[in-house]
Amino acid sequence: MKISEIIESLKLEVATKNVALTAEVTGGYASDLLSNVMGQASAGMVWVTMQGHQNIAAVAALLGLSAVIVAGGTAIEQETLTKAEKNNVLILTTNLPTFEVVGKIYALGVKNTK
Amino acid sequence: MSDTKKMKVTYEVAPGDFERAGEASSGIKRLLQRIGIPAEVIRRIAIGTYEAEMNVIIHAGGGIVTAEISPDSTVIIVSDKGPGIADIELAKQEGWSTAPDYVRQMGFGAGMGLPNMIKCSDKLDIVSVVNQGTQITMLFYHVDKESK
Image (tube, rainbow over the protein chains, first blue to last red):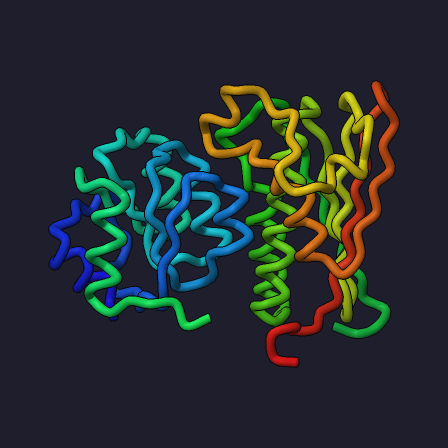
């Protein structure tokens, strides 16, 4: 599934500028612990988190994630967006809580194969 | 790359610099991508280097990250002149952390750094002296583990 379909279905806000919305989503992961995400998430996954600081862009870039969804209306630092845009990381936001975001994405048929 | 060719890059990691955190690991990742190392191997090197880089920023007041890239392996050496690790076996346990609260609020300090480094690398050595510093050496063979 393309990330654009998830954006449309969940009515997510696209926070980054000039980052393509065409990435293929291969699965997902939800956690606010960055080392846990580093160890468990893999390329192409969408990551749902409540963290809004710039290290989420570094983690997503290193792992090659398809997008980061910052849930629960968490404020995102401008530096996070700058860093994400520089590294071609797509950041999406929503007021929905993490549980709702994950449930909706799962219902769309995005599941982890591993 | 021919057998005689060995590449070495060094990055300085500034103390408490959460803004530039990940620069050493992403720089090394880009370099490995350019020379055509398998993606699965790059992923493990990037994760291990990022964790070590974050440890240096959080605990040690900065340090040096060096990558030595050979045709069949990469060695990452991360050294600092920080407080050192009093009990290395304890530090290797999942969930053990001495990170301050402000760091934990950012989602670090879950005690997964060293365990992740051990999991990602083919060999990991720690030399640490309290009040003098720590040096972590990680060896990664350029062999895709997932396709084996």
